[in-house]
Length: 87
Image 1 (cartoon, rainbow, N blue to C red):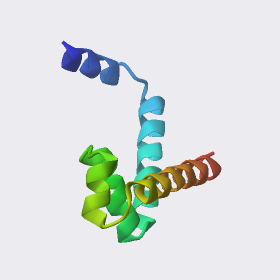
Image 2: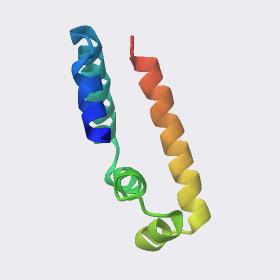
Image 3: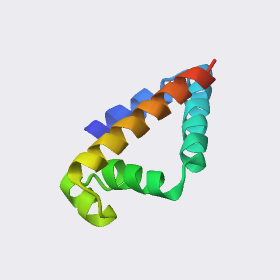
């Protein structure tokens, strides 16, 4: 099953690989926590709640185009900052 394969893959990683993965996750969590609440809300609605842009726009009171543009800019900025800060 998928879960068994995932568990096998996770336990077969070296301690170094697991430490690096943990460091990356910690770094990403820190970047997320530094965002203002409006930006965090957009990310949560889109990626954690998996809502479509139309619903997110209704929730935050913006147009769908504005939400799409803001999310694109936000994700790109996070990627750039994330890549710049990691060794």
